[in-house]
Length: 94
Image (tube, rainbow, N blue to C red; front, side, top):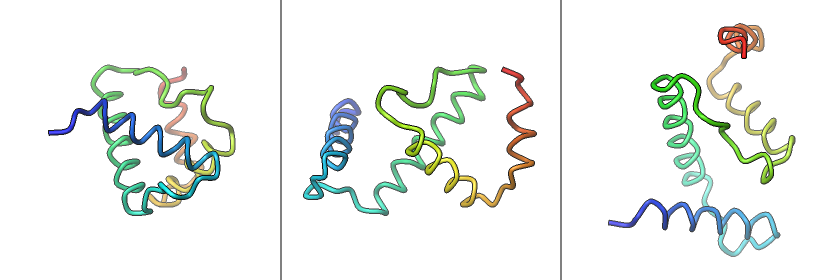
């Protein structure tokens, strides 16, 4: 079995290569969907279990466009409107 830490390191390295314009080690669209789906499920379940986990991203390594592009596509994918999102955001009043 491959250690999770090795998988994470390989994913981070592939992300850095892609960000640098090296498309030689690009992750397929299907694999990226599987990775993001698994990460979202893990984060969501952890949030439900512990109340408020840490930040979902390292703000030193993503920019506003990265986050908003991903969030907007996730909202479209699950067919939720912005009113529902605003109600969900206000449920915890952070």
